Image (tube, rainbow over all chains, first blue to last red; front, side):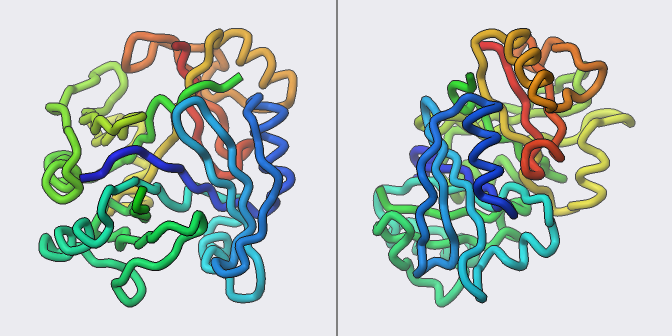
Length: 134
Length: 134
């Protein structure tokens, strides 16, 4: 069912500093920051040869990553995003197997405009998983 | 400097259960478990279209992931492995920029027989990074 690893998301307290580490120390190609107001984050994408790293920092007072950074102030890996061909079929199959979809359980438009959903970390070995239709 | 994302490593308390989740619920191709005695872990690789997930469980009394699982008993993402063309050049460049290499600071043979080193999470936004020459 899952296809490509679309991205690994890393929550960071200082987006400019994190982008500089990837650009200057690790020698990677780094995007400009983009505010995702609907998602409460500002993002920088690091382009690797086969996938991307999404650096996330909080945007606004109710950012979904504020709690994560309160627990891990230095930052840390926040989620993995796997691509699926049909997100509704994936959702039905996972729910039938007992997995929990976060929120109201329905796919929503993600940061790239494509439908996404998030799976409960307790059902996936402590890993928050985003599925994105691609 | 960094090239492909070679793998994302997820530490898990029950390797068979984790492999079953990736195989049966997420529909991915999953390897048989392999003991890596020199590294204190047993590994299962999940093959995705563009990279791999490495599921890790402790092997032996002094496993390097025992402490991680004591803090996160359900499991969690343990490290990211980026490929570099020349690990010694990468090491020198990173150390010159102030990054800390774990252990004695020298590359060692990794789980795939190629030289690897680990970078201190505090220098990389809370993320343990493995560099592997490839």
